[in-house]
Image 1 (cartoon, rainbow over the protein chains, first blue to last red):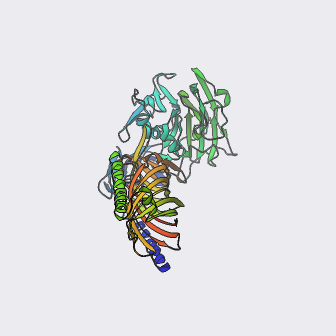
Image 2: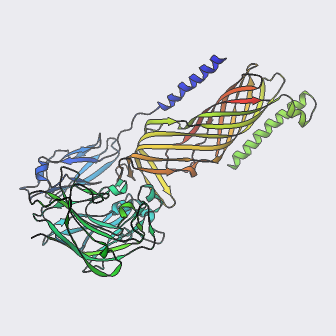
Image 3: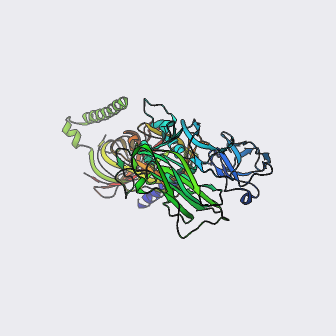
Length: 377
Length: 261
């Protein structure tokens, strides 16, 4: 009888793994991504590695080229195909479109690939120009700031914000009586700037799902850099644009208004605050081979940082009158500015100083306008 | 649900009626006689091995990284009414409390899920690691037909109803990314060790219907060893639950001891 039991149990134990080994054959890939992009002589011609977004690829050239004929090469989701083919020479005087088709042939994505010359630097920002980005999946509508190069119609798109991240949930957060408009998002243009239009940043709640994705609070922010949707959310904001000037930055100035939200919430201890306040800072940092950005959690400790300008507690006030501010760059770590070296820089504004750690008050609002950068003589 | 309750009551009544009329046919009448002649009682305890399994793994599941049955215990009390002194056919009604669950880690690819919390929802295709921790406790009422194979061995099989008394279905996703809306939608990447936790305990089905088939041995005069395989017909989670796109059915191997008197 013991043998019977033994055999019975053994045979049952053998059957169980059979269920487990019933893993079906892998389906063909349904994704259609461009994972990387490059051109010949990339390190000589380009400011930084190209910026790859969900459906855009941006190559930034150091100088005006003789012609805009380039043959970018792409790596794709395994099994996917791209039309025109990778390595095809095209004239990128205007942006070109590529269509990527997934391995299972069921899904397509169209990428817009552009080449721009990034060899200048703007020293003043008035926040007069926004593009309204409309998305369908998920539904959304938000502002993206850009500037025109002086006296031209050429756009310089160097600002970004957390709006793309907030967009993931925006359609489900909007109340029954509210409409999903750009003003609902953490960062939007305001018609009432100090002069003309300005930017309004407000800290928003992210609802029950926000916490699940690691973002229990969304501070309104605007920065020179780009956004790449990542969990944890703090890794999504990528600060940094090429600093195309041969003299070191000296000051950043502008105008602000600030109102703190009613209830300060601490999502990650410890917090230095009992009441919410704003932050504005600028960083000059060294360029390297790749990953030329500072993540949201840089904490001012990244070894590439050369100099920092940041508002002090004397400016961390609440005011409903446009108030001027000016901050000075200070070198850190014994570093100095080398005119022969290549640098990146960023300007960052946020409606909650500890927003990178999701401490803040819903409703805290920062208004900014007429920002200027000066450099050493 | 109401329909199913009615069905259960009808089945139990038929069973009881058959027993009562049988005993009536053989000798003197009376409820007391019914409960003392040709009837065995048993107090038992068992542990369960198994879990909630999809019937045929969908292609989205690429690899089971780990499976941990955890300790699932149960206790029960049953009465077996034999139709004759020969004890070759009988009917058994049991009541018990059982814990059922498992912990798994699996790699999924392009797995469609919709995560809903209050009014907020995110719908997309997730590729990456999914860890699941299931721990539910049920009040069970199995009803079986028993066949006495020999003096020491019985076979039994029948239906069961399980009623949820404590629930737990939670876990987290990590090491991957979510594509919002379509497989070419906005990509939300999970970096490093970061994870998004979920708790779908509210979606666990409160009533389950299933079957069990098993065998038991009399080790000594009062001590039985039994093992039975249990399978549930309806899914672990409610039908309208969309975060998991396939049905999961509980199937377990139960092994236990009983004291018969």
